Image (tube, rainbow, N blue to C red; front, side):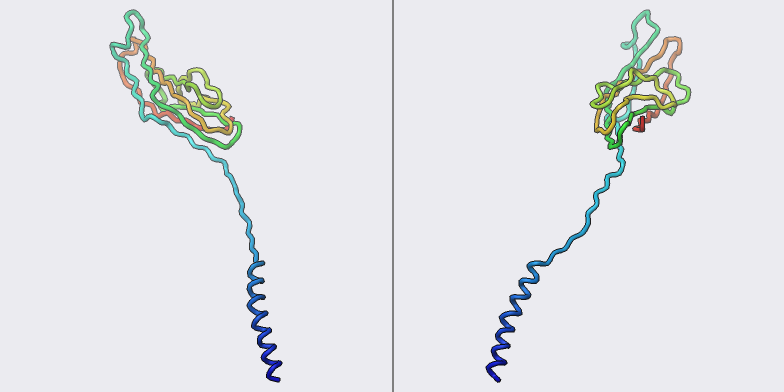
Length: 163
């Protein structure tokens, strides 16, 4: 009887560690990963505020129109939505002097010709689609000598929106 019990005990000791090792080697697990991309749009102006000043050096004798131009700012945008455009507007309801803007060399889409800024959003760049892009902003202030002197302060708003 003692031999049989010892034999069974030895067999169990040999079999148990082997079966535990094999069961761990075949264990698996899984889970689901979902990637969701929502509509994203970002727009920013690089270059800070712009000051357009007409001074004596900018005036041509005999011409009533006085012009000051600046293109030190850039517009950058990114959107993953299709059929998008960029519009521009000013907060100044009744400007004394004309202010026009042109998007120069946009990396995506098509720039409108010079845009006279008003409170109504006006197309600046159309057809930007799904893109990340940039352009230079060319501001031109225009005054007539008969308008005299003064200052207009604009807050310019750029918006990416559906076409």
